[in-house]
Amino acid sequence: MLVDFSVIPIGGGVSLSDEVAKVIRLIDESGLPYKLNPMGTVVEGEWHEIMALIEKCHNLVLADQERVLTSIVIDDRKGKVDMIEKKVESVKKKLGWAPTGA
Image 1 (cartoon, one colour):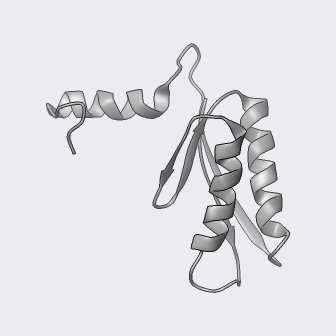
Image 2 (cartoon, one colour):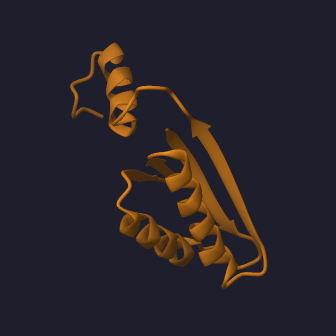
Image 3 (cartoon, helix red, strand yellow):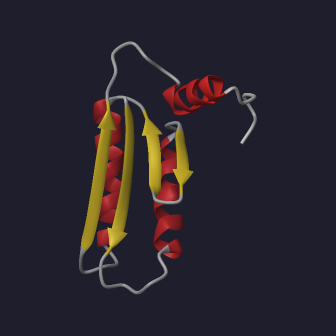
């Protein structure tokens, strides 16, 4: 499954990069495939792995903040793996773009 999620501290100021860096470090240490994007992070794995990771990320931010909003979008498709890259490559192929093109 693919999960796109974000953990947003509420009331901690305008810049979130310090909090994001802490969360990404935790995600990286999980060993799960992931891709950071400007509005969140996509992680690929099994339900229990990803949900446990999201809980850790949420609690990490909540430890330093009074309020946290965690948003989760799930794409669960049976029998598919390596979807982080394959979904993007499929769209690029339909557009006629080279696999490494913009």
